[in-house]
Image (cartoon, one colour):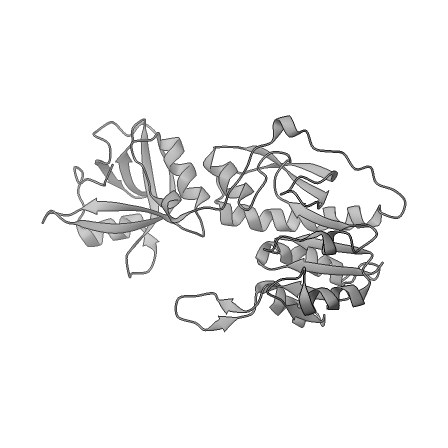
Amino acid sequence: MRTVFLGTPEIALPTLRAMAASSEFRPLAVFTQPAARRSRRGGAESSPVGVEALRLGLPVHEVEAVSGGEALQRLVELRPEVIVVVAFGQILKKAVLNLPRHGCLNFHPSMLPKYRGAAPVQRAVLDGVVESGLTIMRLVRRLDAGPILLQRPWRLDPGKNADELLAEAGELGAPMMLEALGRLESGITAVEQDEAQVSFAPPLEKADGELRLSESATQVVNRIRAVQPWPKAETWLKTDDGGELRVLIHRAEIAHNSGSGAVGEVLAIEKRGIVIACGQGAVCFTEIQLEGKPRKPARDVANGLRLKPGAKFRG
């Protein structure tokens, strides 16, 4: 089958590798977002998909917009029978959607129609969802609204953050995509989404990483999990001189049987980390980072700051 692959970040790599290893579905070419600055100190770098495609010996096209101009012409010349899309990062227009006879197949890490949009895993974690799913659908012009070809249930492990869950989703999605591709010729039933069940997952914003310790401990931990790797959770530690110290929180857990105190108050410094009172319950920061410093076990940072119970984080 003549296939073309469209993708950009790490979550797309397992599907790309699986297709490249398949004699039947090896892509004729890979389209990805243009090289960009991917770290604060580095220069422009190709996307993870672009780098991996070259390693796999696949032709790579870095394109600003695949739905028009030279990029579209290249795509037309390839005469794909199906286009596979995993986190490409561009909205596909009619000229692309209607090009292959089997359409454009997309992997989406939610149980559609729940969490349509750019951040389905992050928003689900933020909402405290545990039982979710993975979907292969055919793309249409409306956002994540196309008919469903294949779905599997997926548990969002409460011990994993969104970054780890996205990596897991990518691995689980690869065999699903190969299964869907393998059933195209023999016939695969497409099921329309129930519009009454739709919810949306817009991209995260910088403000989503701001901790609100007035929330419950469960909500605080879920927010810390949801905003990894970006924008990362942050809070502010009040200092003895009346100032505040910015602290990034990488990992945390609910602290049980930890006593009570005012919102944001440090209740204890334990081997596992810093225990802080929330609006309901308490949370233990286990891995944190002071601005401009490396991430460390929270207890080590507390010892370095000579932090004591009674210290306050911004509520």
